[in-house]
Length: 311
Image 1 (cartoon, rainbow, N blue to C red):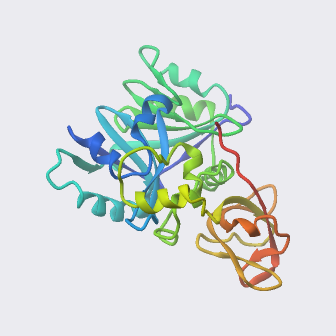
Image 2 (image 1 turned 60 degrees about the vertical axis):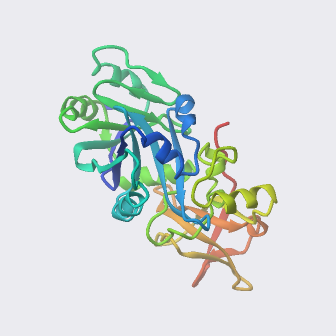
């Protein structure tokens, strides 16, 4: 029997890259904004890869397993990131592989998810921070008001898992998962927003995905200077509004009276309850304004609120 709030989601709009080899940890640690040593504590981190000017190329979830590191990122950026990241390997003992077709990515929401997963393992799987792993799967527990997980399973093991999941859970719409990501303050950079924002603007520093203590990585000097000089003038907020359509990534928010640009939409999704919800990077001085609207649609007001992340 289905639980009322238990759903599973097809996450095939994400891709999975595997980074393996003797130098994999040091290589990736020297490329991303996050401190990979945090994986020992948290199990997974949400982090970013930047250009030398500090602008974010992509955001991704990273976790460890099978003597490798794995990156979950939007499928539309896979080829761009795979190609650019490959150029930095040089003589390092690192293998970068697209394993999207070898694994199933499934989103889960609802109670007793961990209990269901335990039924598919031959022994109690180890737990590292917010990650559960067994010989059959890795499962990442996300921060959210209700239990929410990303399940990663090899294709040759997923059938048994799916049988249990589809029996206990209803299938949810992909847009429903995206809405949950937005409400959790998890920004997914795509083609239209790549190379546009510094990681602090996307609140990456509030998610354990940006370290100011680790060594060098692309963009580190610009990112650190902004932090230590206290010059951050933009950050990400959760917004909501009412319209007969959903704003798109890269759309702008403006002041209704002056028409001055206040910010940019990162992700947006329709809200079944009413209207739409979005993540937007906005000038901090404009965040409390009551006259924000979508550019070209002054009749569609957008209200913002700060995003709170787990400590």
